[in-house]
Image 1 (tube, helix red, strand yellow):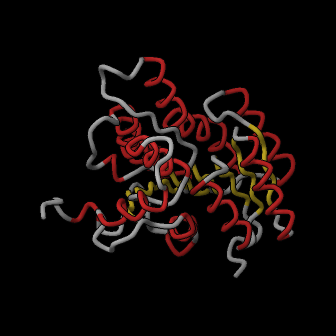
Image 2: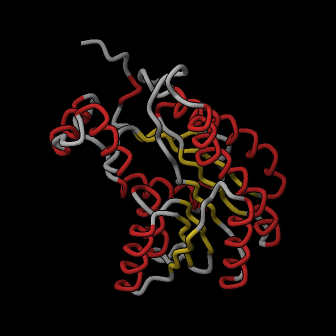
Length: 261
């Protein structure tokens, strides 16, 4: 189904959910630019796109650096003709509370997870206006709603994404630009592998850890990046034309209960 034909999408993050979203939108007809700094992931994604002959390019960019974001946006505009969809999936996930998380680590987390959304809007919204509108999808987390211990920087950034999404939705509604967020539970990504090794040590059994993480979700499993990509594609499509300013949880029921057994 080529429902995104003639649409141009920019996706930040070339691993995990970002990778899945970029491929999903390209398979549905969008011209996609994926932005990331993981060299190996960038090469892998570009090779996958080439193998499938998808209209997808990968650009190396640190999305919390204004000059890199501006340059990448301009390259997309020149190459593809504009911007219709932005999916902000780039993220880092430091561990620690407020006493053992350095200020530098905290600020880096905020810069990547929140600052990149600001920069993508700063340089992307003017291009969307030229096209008569667009959609911005921000990847947050259930940890923006309820959190575990020892993740203060990460949850601060994810809560900020919820607030920023509402503000942007109001600010850009008159431009026919919709802004929404997605809050996944545990999803099979490199960040979840980091969680497994953080709690289980460097030699942790990742499959066993994922099974245990899945047991915390009422549906009994973790999510897949492709499932989040499906939701992102729906929210970016005309089928969701009356949806803006809202957060959409895809968490296997994790936040529906209070976790007492």
